[in-house]
Length: 238
Image 1 (cartoon, one colour):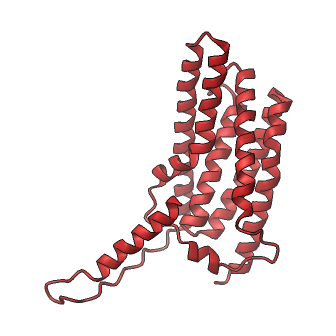
Image 2 (cartoon, rainbow, N blue to C red):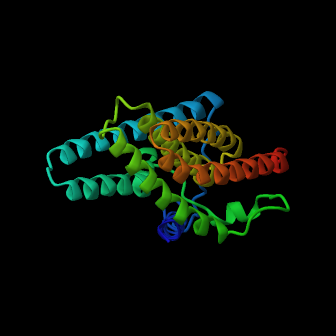
Image 3 (spheres, helix red, strand yellow):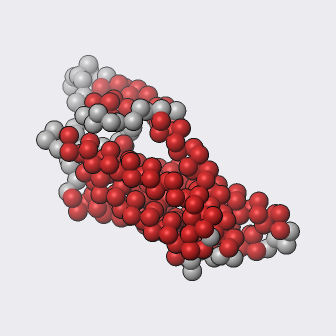
């Protein structure tokens, strides 16, 4: 809903620009100058900077939350604060990515509709239906592992890897859907999937229950990565 609102706002703004009179030509229609295509190096720098910034911010947030949890003596309060911290991280990381990226482009639903997709492309409604339970399971699993690790953050490879996978997922959404970079998105999503596999293995070593709760996301991201690969292949000459 928020993305559709931004799309409508951008459309209205563009309409205003096109019809703004100038001294020389009172009703001259101003043509939008297309932005130059970034170089591959610039795209990789964009991905790296966004991922590093969001990862650091989320880890610092968790470190602050760990200090809050440590200051509380009641076990129930510790549990609630810990789970609340992970709920904010897992559910709110994508909002943070929007702030980090500050994209000049706005989401275009028409773009994805025009992209050639494979015959096995899942229906659009399936994605939110799948992500809701997966995100909830991730929240619970991360909380379980964090308690087992005594709320360590920067000294825990499992927590760092888990946060990195969240960040790469957000970067993929930005690169693929907002910036419409199919090939860059392909590289990011396979990195996303690889880090997720590593995070799941590390979490399993800490707590088998935590690993089991995160594991279904591995399968779903693999499906999304395969879809991105097929979309790139079908649209490579366009």
